[in-house]
Amino acid sequence: MQADRISLGQFLSLRSGGKRVNTADALTYLYLTIGTILMFGPVLWLVASSFKTQAGLVKYPPPLLPYQQVQVEVEGYDEPLPLFAVTQEDGSARELAQVRRVGIEAQMVDPADPDAERIKINIRQREPVEEVKLAWENYLDPLVELENFDFFTYLKNSLLVTSIATAITLIINSMAAFALSKYRFKGRDAIFVLFISTLMIPITVILVPVFLVITSIGWKNNLWGVIIPGAATPTGIFLLRQYMLTIPDELLDAARIDGGSEWHIYWRIILPLARPALAVLAIFSVMWRWNDFLWPLIVLSQNDYFTLQVGLNAFQGELQIQWHYVLAMTVVTLLPITLVFAFLQRFITTGIATTGMK
Image (cartoon, rainbow, N blue to C red; front, side, top):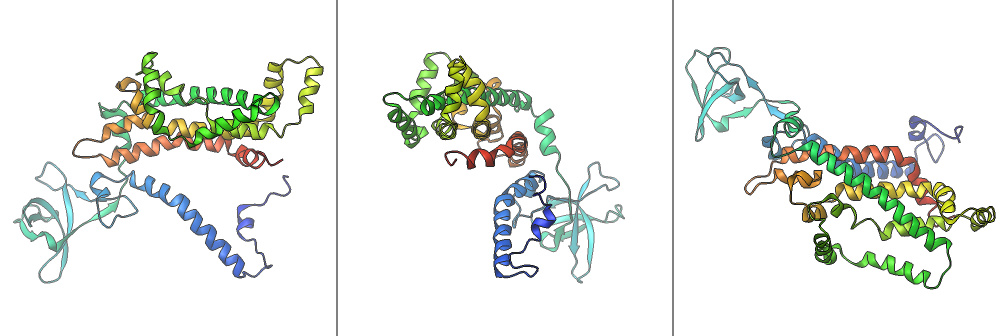
């Protein structure tokens, strides 16, 4: 397999018609380019926008890069003044700093000669002088300064919910899939169809009864109330069952002849052989639990138990939404998912390609 690998440059230089680029090559690279832009374009826009100020986010047309207005230190003024490129009546242009604005008239001063008389300019005759500058405070303020956003508590809760829920999901779904794929009993197929049919039930239909159950057992404002209700998933059972059907039954029979128990067969044979499918389900479970917002919002009402997704709701007020903080913290919440995907991505192709297709 190592000898068949090629570099990225060699892959991009592949041609179907020899050395010359034909129509098929051009259409293929055009299709791949458009697909790459559609997939990664929104992510790049999100990252770039997370470094913009609140004022930069409402600009029209919206710029791709995070521009900020240049602020200059002017002698005699305590605070830096915004810099503008002013077009004068004779057509000449000069850079002036704005001292104050009254209606459509701005009072400007020359930064090089602050003692000179202030110049009154119509705001239509000026354009802000901007430069590319990253607003790192979008990331730093929620972490250290904002009192209504306890990032590290939310991060701890999200990590606990995601890790424990994923472990429980893998155990329960793999046990159910093992029973439905390797044991023959009356009603097995009917039970499997019943599991799969639950996919047609919208989550909104069961929110109220599940919430009543969680409240009755005292799990409201408890992380277990977020973890347990979604532990068994029909998608996970289907994925693992289809994969386990490809495992030869002769391996299980040989283990039973050697005196192995059913638990030994499940733990020592089934789980190691189903590792690619388990990795795929682990990625799905991490994404589901980490990005879940509606159910934690219903179960949790105390700030100490909020997950990151629910905590982001703190930036939404009655009259204003702090989009610069929302975008920055959204980028932060994407990092764990990216790391998990990067670590387990080598199992994805194997797990999906061999699920029910061996």
